[in-house]
Length: 449
Image (cartoon, rainbow, N blue to C red; front, side, top):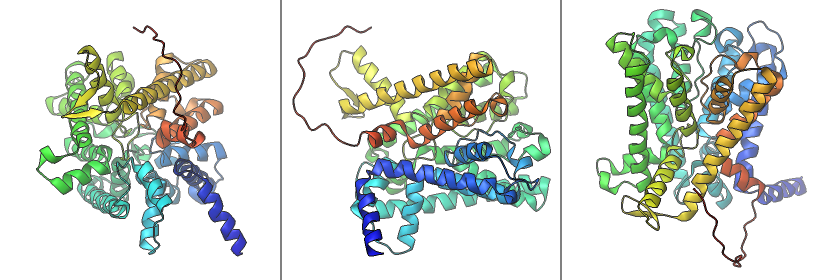
């Protein structure tokens, strides 16, 4: 027995923190798929096919929201509960949840555990991981509880006692940027929140939960610690807050003037704000996406690709990646040697990482869209919308997901997993060794642009 434990410890020690993150997510997805296959999980009491269960479990753990069966009308209360648990685990991160359980059990965190949490949360420092883990769970529980209470007047008034469950479900789904909803049994399958487009109160609460979850736990830690001393905020916090504000304001203004002009003023404001917030990366929608203009859908695709912020419940390339690319471009335009922001220099390695992330997300999504378009004989824009939504872990769709071939759906599963785990995490896991060589090849310039 001791030899078995020793072998297990040696195996764990051979794994890098990035490999542990990937294995953790994959393990939870497989377990979730098995539970969703049980007859107890479906309303009709039948065994759910593995491909449907796998797609749903992946979408839940990767907090995406793309579905091949309607959540409310297909899954039983038990199935919906399993999905909600998977959303919660995926939103916080498998490693974070495991670490919190370790803290509750009184076990001491090893250096390897701390490094894994650091990489999972994109934390700048190794110290204080236990306190950070506790902070994350306090913020999560408080926000989701308050969100559920705020949603109860709307849902209880319409659904009675069932409204309590719906309030809890949608609060967690919104905070975790998952996009799963329970409206299909009342307003039609895959209807999302379109029936509440005129309800400014519900739209505002959902938007608030999405933004709080998408800003990132490290950002909230900085804000809570330093409060109104904005000058003392870390550069990353300032960049996240400014970028997030711009990415909400500008698209909302566009949608207000060009996509929802036929609605009343209150509805226009509500729908414009909601459609500006939800693509990064929540997946709810209060408007019919197919009725929006091509320009409007294109803006949504860009927002889906960008996503939320590092160390958050959201996916995408992240707001900081976009900011670094823009800041570096400005430095190039001004013929400056380094990219600078808020009196700080951004290291060249960060710029390289940002460029690599953008290239991977765009190229993988485009290649997947081409394959899906060929396999299903669908227009490219609809396929690009679908793949951007999957890799950005958003969940918005033009309605083609359930009709795709099993192979196309599996491609979306891979994109969702890639988008949630992170491109660099997968690369570092596959190539965990570092090139320690100090030798360099001879320099020769190549013309670009």
